[in-house]
Length: 346
Ligand SMILES: [Zn+2]
Image (cartoon, rainbow, N blue to C red):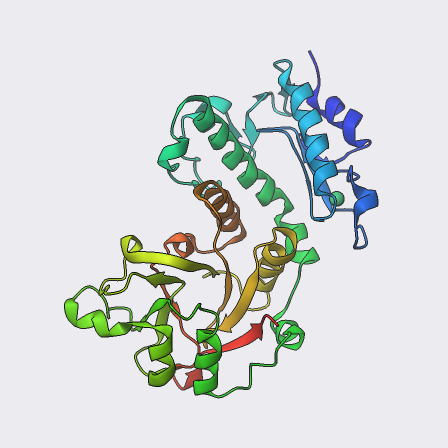
């Protein structure tokens, strides 16, 4: 019977194994890196859907190619590894960070992770809920979470972007602008025709709340007086309820976390912007403990679900994928402190 670790080493060369199934390796596209290469930039994992993952973006095609070869070779046969303690890990199973084995069957059935392990990726969109496609997607999502959990420490180190650095790096100087200017600067993120909601959390659901849903041009006149919150999505004209069904066209993915500090979450923003190429438009200081990153929304449900699986592992709030979720609007005051843009795309 084949040992998947040998197969992996046959493709990427020597592996510095960190666990029984995953370790650091040389990136198959290292010569294409445009930034200096660190020892922990590339990782190979043989469990779940076997994966080579590198923090660099420029090596993408070479890594994708190596991944195809790895998966093709490992798909040829059933394999198993006897883990220390006697547990058996078979092809397609995933070894979680706490040492438990999640079997391929459990993953494909969409069973919840037990105990302290990773957050459940949630239900699949209807288009993916059938047969082999569904089983594959569940395996991909579970692998993505396991791999993200493994490279999380390196991610926070490599992409580290503390709050003061974020402000210094802003292509446009915005943090010192006054409340009105903060609000108008933020409005310019939206196409002029968009209808945007601004209010307090409960300014929604009744016909009298229609006044909180207005075109961008009207908000320019009114200023930041209607409440402390907005949404990352625009709404259908005439809406009075902030619901996903009323979302319309333009939307942003607003990335936030209840657990990461202002000095930590920048790493997630930098990773999304530079490695995953979700355009970062603005970073907003909520005048509380957190920062919000405004990004392009994922192009489709599959990308969205994969991103969600990964971001929740990093400590981001799963509610950010509810597009009608209220978020802090720049230009309003919270307990005497200004909610403001601290980083703005040039
Ligand atoms: Zn690479």
